Amino acid sequence: MSAGEKRHTVTFEINGARKTVAVEARRLLVHLIREDLGLTGTHVGCDTSQCGACTVEIDGRAVKSCTVLAVSAEGASITTIEGLTSPGAELDPVQAAFHEHHALQCGFCTPGMVMSVRQLLKDQPDPSDHEIRHGLAGNICRCTGYHNIVRAVESLASKGEQS
Ligand code: FES
Ligand code: FES
Image 1 (cartoon, helix red, strand yellow):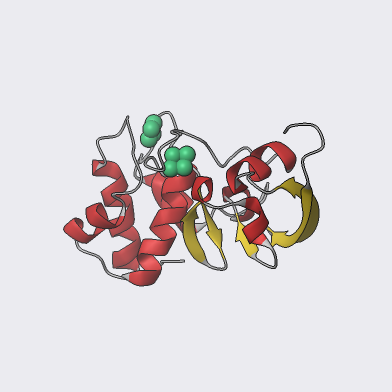
Image 2 (cartoon, helix red, strand yellow):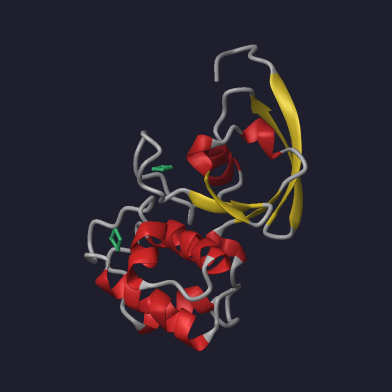
């Protein structure tokens, strides 16, 4: 931020905690989440809004947080990957399915992928293979070839365990 640049106060809820922070007008939400709040489970994998690694939930909808200005989070309720479970608690069903079906390798895409799967299952509780691949088209994985990710999502659909 350049010296003297005006900051704006923003109040929102993130993972159940109320926060008030001062941000410059052009600051992106993903940088607020990672750098100001230290929630580094939300990743940055591109600068073209294509990879989906930065996906979080804003008011219950999956959104690429690199496409959102931090100031627009005023009054919002945000959930990041850290908000899906806590140490010692059970994993979120999507996280558990990824684990069970080996749906990650390096894990870089996984936080954003999990948030997008949650959205996919809200929108389509019993998606076909094609619908899963289409629904996750905004999330890029360089490791898995997507096959096990699709299997993990199918397992949730067939069990009716979508979150
Ligand atoms: Fe947001 Fe890649 S960092 S889409
Ligand atoms: Fe490595 Fe998806 S598991 S990018």
